[in-house]
Image (cartoon, rainbow, N blue to C red; front, side):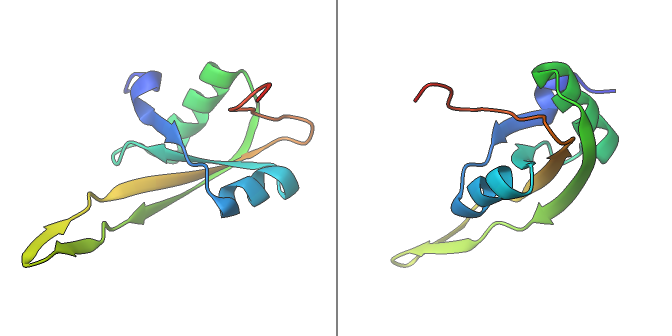
Length: 96
């Protein structure tokens, strides 16, 4: 079992993730590529002291980008959508 702090990398704050947080009680995280749903659920429950209803994960391939004649690739990553129980919320920017 991995350390719970190495499972969650950072929360994803996008337009769609903000909509999901407000309307569907879901929070989106970038997670370690080798983390599974059970580890993600335990990490969120321990770090934020919230109850997790379900976890959905998706592996995303990094895009190929060019800068003139030089070609590079963004890293691959894993995204997790965490659904919380009704009444539970996680605030990333409290008081802003």
